[in-house]
Length: 333
Image (cartoon, rainbow, N blue to C red; front, top):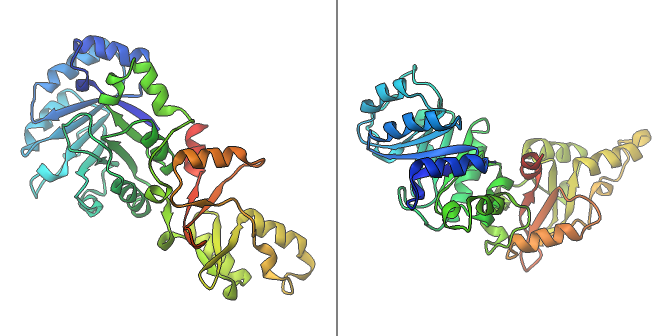
């Protein structure tokens, strides 16, 4: 996951010093907030003479057309317009360079992106735009998941309340870029803050149920319907590489791609006669929905084998969701 440093969140130093500090600590992007102030482009012109870091520009305005010529004169790598302020007939000129994004605040549904599906990414504002130091609203975890399901080929950027624990969760969800402002500059140093945003050891107060893939989005099969065809369909259409198995709503185990291959190899001479229950891993590692990220990491570290899927159970032993580590593994390579 890329880190976009919000340059105006540092109000204690000249802008040039802030940029030099972010560049020295190898931040990925420079986030520039433009609250309907064209003077921002004077800063962008200066930044271009100071460093080569990509610029991530977020514009909040009711009159976007007055920025088009400025964007042509000072092209940026990423440009985002705030949805709630835009006129109904807003259209981005085709000759504006850079990746295009649409920013939405927490109350706005992701369906707002439907009119802008030719854009490259969505920027989810997890706190109030323009206010530094806000707290991440966990409802945005669901918005991120819903958007990635609806637009699997589009990127997700997140701005607001991103600290070390939120950053870990976002990386696990496959978020492309997170914007960090006050968290970067209120730390002992920018370097220390960046280490917190990217480190693997996290102490978290968020619960697993806040960001897991919920039951209604999980592939699930009842043991009474456990045929080879049904298992293949659940694993294929669920797109997780695994399906949960239940018996009368009670969790029985999981069947992963590996479990399926193992059972087929053991029954190559009698596929039609094999006992399909042999496919079930009845003792997978599981976690309670009330556990924290810290609990989850400690649980995974205790295992002698890599954990790819983590079924989430409630206190009654019913499956309520699943955690996968595919996105996190991709991001750490």
